[in-house]
Length: 120
Image (tube, rainbow, N blue to C red; front, side):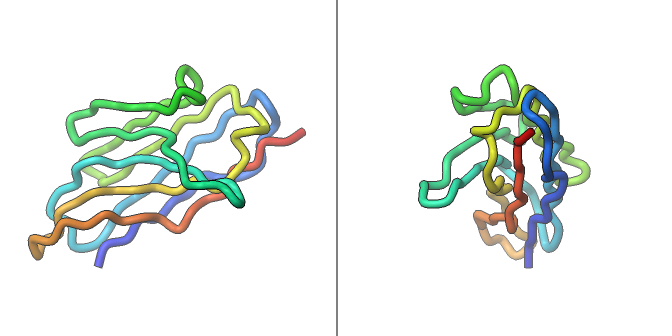
């Protein structure tokens, strides 16, 4: 079994910052891409940012210049530093990982989600 555990969500004022973390654990051989997605009520889940095992990153246009994704491969952990937060960033953020297990299975795994609320 493999699981992703997110942390770091919460309430922040507009213009403020938050840092999300997501740790993968379980029977993991290697992790390829990791990423963050978000989904507002009634809307489709959308990509926020992704990062490959080699460190290549990709961002949604709406967060470029404000959010930074990074990862610690030794800890199987991905981070999302969110600066200059706006009310429209309010929603649930989900961690994602594409990985190989120790039993030679390729899986796409999702975290349980963490709520970010940007409000004064």
